[in-house]
Length: 273
Length: 168
Image 1 (tube, each protein chain N blue to C red):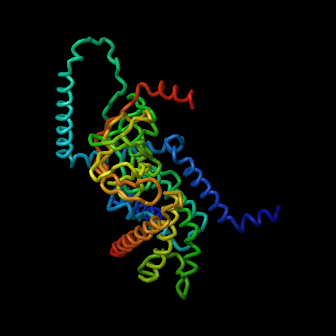
Image 2: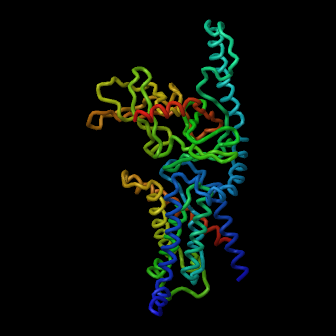
Image 3: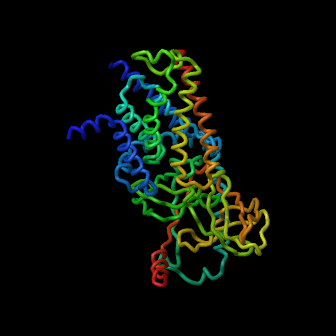
């Protein structure tokens, strides 16, 4: 017993160090889905107020830009609407069911906390479970894809940004339809890397890259960016550098997209896999 | 005693505000992310007991984690920094030892001593932090570059802050 006490007295710093380091690493290891860790969830509530205040100040200085972005988006939506109105087949059936043939739901949210300078970036939006958002919904900005929701609380959601080493999405070249996998390499917030495109496919700088819709998270055909450079690292596949369309540094208003048929698709796919 | 607790409380708040409001928002490039809050660990009194230092370091790191949304990452790097601090101080102690009841400040121990002291601890802290952040060894040298560049910036800012502190 005395030996034990002596031992503890001698190494008490090391022991405290190991205990604290253990707690920290435990928090870190549950960190990838940290929004689920109770402790942190509770404590994040305190900092959220500060974050929102910082963001309010920031957005005040950018009001003019934001207005212009919204106006531009409005115009493009109006022209799409005009196209749809003129489609003849729409005139011939009246729909009483409001979700008839509708696959995706859209809702607008505001980014209240964002970063681009880490290796694993997340951002927070000001809508949550109360507004019908849930985990695995897609998030896009007016310019292109932005991320996927990984955690929801009552009023807020945390989104894994495309600028996260753990983020992967299936993407294709618009002109020829060949698809590969897109992720961020952690270097520059303006570029991502598209891999798994075979060598025989014609690729040229400026080609548009868009989503495939295979994952049941993102709808098909949402623009991600354009090819800015490609190289042949040896092997059978290209390494294509994609200039992202969305400017993550200025992310402000985002659309959250929910897939109403996701459960059905996944269930069917699971029975065969 | 009360006085020094108040003083350190003030330093803590100022450093946290600087870190959260200013330095976390510097998006110069992915390579430069200065973390100056570690200065709080540097400035604690010379004679503080090691266990106290570790516990203070843990909660300092945890506070930054809350604002960065990365539980445990800063806490674990800061605890490591707190753990090595007494060893670093012993290693580079001035010829006639540390004055009882003093802080490790630039006025007392000089610029060169403070620079070496800051550099070693910031490098250890940043190395732990950035490798924990990516949590993989691919792109080892790119992470190393981030560590070195960010450390240089952090050390520069800490030295500058120490100069302004001296002025008061």
